[in-house]
Length: 364
Image (cartoon, rainbow, N blue to C red; front, side):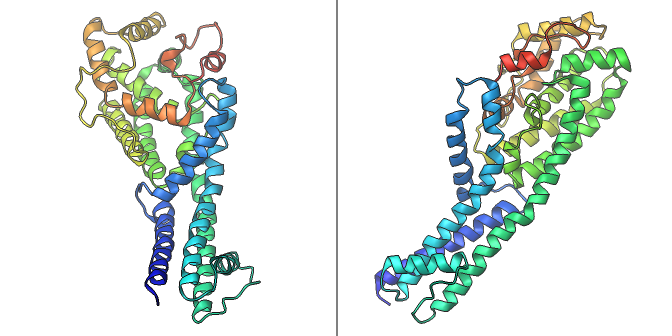
């Protein structure tokens, strides 16, 4: 075999092997893997969607466009795989003696799509054709077989996001949640919520790093988002631990840690940079004025607030700094609704403009 043909065969085999590795990393490997082919499919699809859902568009338009990103990316992914496999086998067919590159491409396409109208007329050509057909079917079957797993994980995630709206409205607000719980049942229910959401964070770390399409899957309602829910729950725990005058509950601390670790692991998959060891005094996207407004609202609604607000602010910032960078980056990545910090704050019993309408007007 001439050197050029040998090189073509080796490069083609490497392309096929690389595609198989992508399938294994994306759907079988039980850990987050930043695979190049998968990233190409998802990032390429996102760039196209962002032409419609650019920052200057109304949030309703952006939300509708982004709702298609996850599902369409899953459709594009096997197309990318099949194209690379087809090109790889085209090179191998040509290397073993198929006269022209076009004939090799026809043989490759017929084998990959199991059409059977072209059969390689060279020695060992049938072996390549059989292997290509098997690999193509296996990759498509792999994607289809994992769709129930993806949607089961999505359903479990969204159950908590939906239930949070009952307590915290939509988009979720810690101010609304704390004032509602204080009026209805007292703040004793918070302890159970910290434990439940700690487990929720552990699950999204597992599912959203190994099945990255879930990161882009949006909630059924435009003002719900798993990213917004994550931020609201960590903020609620941070406010409670720093400024609400109730007995300390270590479950809040553990939940915050579970949350920021989950967001960091997901950020790693998307190459999002963040400070690994932030200082408690580092600035965050939440201002002192916004924090004071939140405390004023919950205090007027009957939530006991500590007297030393300077220390409360330092403690809150010390918690928030652990997840501020990753949270804001994931909000931008997923085009999440406006954060509750960016909306007019109100208690659960205020009768002013509904939060959902405010969020639509202030869409991220």
